[in-house]
Length: 219
Image (cartoon, rainbow, N blue to C red; front, side):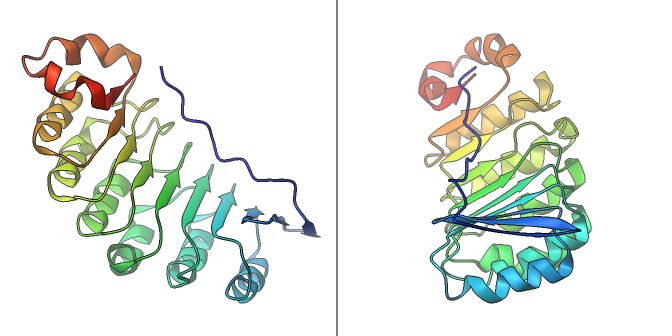
């Protein structure tokens, strides 16, 4: 398995604590841990005049995800959104769909671990098909992602020409789902690396066209 290192924030230069959560500012990012709605609004009000270009949201709720992302997606200085141990539901993604599709600044979207299920992935891929800026999509570590969403992920690879990195290891996508993804990878010329579980390596290597895609697979 080629591991993808999780995002690490630098030592905060300023930390404010409230009973309901914690906000940590570093030179390049702001991390919110179990934040209240008030803390989120305070962070948003400061982001437009700051140099932080990454938002990290830990251990929060779908309502807070919507509150943050509905505003963060409008801030052009933000280049990366990292959602960790926080459920992001289909309904929230559908509400954000237009903004996700038309955002022109986000390069990295990290939704891991234990954050999203098949319904959420299906909604997300529809939002990303016509997105022109996100190059890295990190969905690993989500056991509720199964082969049910494999076709939607394959369609994303078929129609999106911006994405260059997709992580799907530590999910429950089975052999059938992987084969669907492999077919789409044959015609996708922009994805540089697709990370899958090690158990799928033999299945992929037995494909007749494996040599044409092997340098773009990571296990």
